[in-house]
Length: 207
Image (cartoon, rainbow, N blue to C red; front, side, top):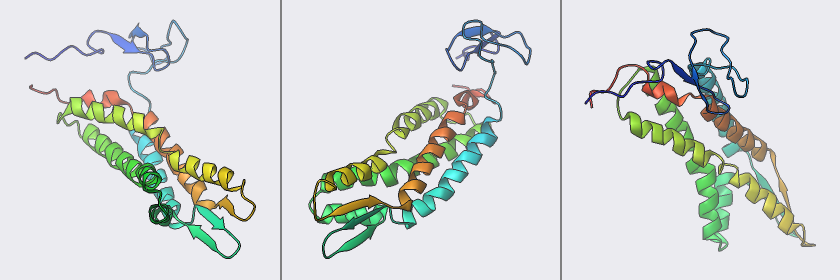
């Protein structure tokens, strides 16, 4: 089966802003005729930027899990909870649904993004033709679930707001929330920096 022609072979380049397919003139100063944005055949320094953001996000993810993210205080008890201890406490105190949501958003989603983006970077850099359509779908999945990663921060904010209605208890966020929020932002920027067209570069598949 003959491979479908690529945009470069047809002399086309797409605009990253408005999506318009433009004629590739071969220059370095090409601009989109519709929105005026600079045109690039590939995002500049995509590998380097994505790796830098991904590694920085992973380094911040460590204190995000080690440091407490929330303090709950009542008349006779003060508890500082990390992400894991918070999940356990939610489960023990009769909120298994919320515990599963927080665990998924705080542990499963970030680790899935680290592993997925790392796989995409390594395989694309090597020019691998392995499972290209599946890797493209994986990238779209990473982009889709990335926006749900802030759910844990929202849960802390919601609990803080709800508990403040009570007179004998208090909930306040702790530094772990900041590190977790920065991790989410950096992983989102990493997925935005990765150019999915790199998946299709290199050797063509014989399929």
